[in-house]
Length: 331
Image (cartoon, rainbow, N blue to C red; front, side, top):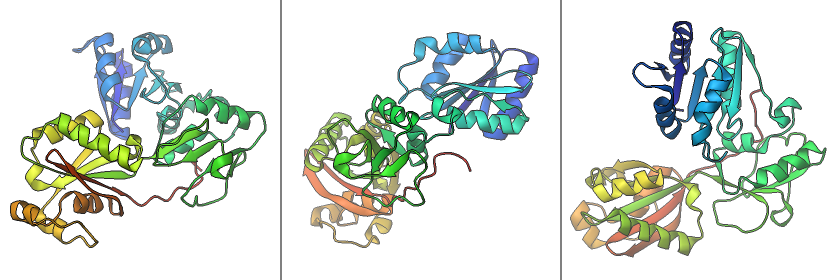
């Protein structure tokens, strides 16, 4: 988690620095050198979490122009400069603000002021569960329907093609795919159910030198169309180390928010499996296949989309192991 902290007084800055050291963040003093608006704009777009050490009203006014959606906004927490209260004011569940407030309160011996309904009543929060299970939410508007069912005393059903370890908490239960309130899937699905996408897919890439980001986007779109994989399932792209500084590939990964990892030909050649060999690729790279081998090696899992080629680009996809459980809050 990338954490930025901003304080407004000397005392508050000391507290911000203490928290930054404890939680692994970066503390700043308002006006030195950035003002409130400039600091907030940068932190909101770049950080996973923001902490304002000062008045809640200042924080609310500062972030207001930047708030977009619960699925995209960073966590925002306000801490008074005496360290008595930690108040999450944005992205309590999906962004992790509630958890961050609890961590801050525990560190300072203060109180986390949590106001989300499920937390107040100790009920299952599906969006917090999704975050802990490394899932992305495709249709966050469905969270309200799911939570309303739990808050009204009902039981919401979740479908998962993966076994979910442990015992379902009160308010949640396993359900069939056609009769569920939420489902876990890496494929594109239709319907009203809340769709939770585990971020476990790795894209293997091979390409000619100077291939453009646009060409890679077209190849990726073709792979998604052919496989029905959801783009939110991808968290990383992998290739051979010859492509370490390939501009188009780096731009493609940055645009897609994908981590990028490269491997040597020797490491790729040592990967076991049934891959699509190419004598030409071997003559250029020293290994018979780049995209499939890179996807498997980068994921530590299973190849699910074999090599697709076109316009000087090859792509494949693999899924990392995934073992969800029912934990949704600290025990």
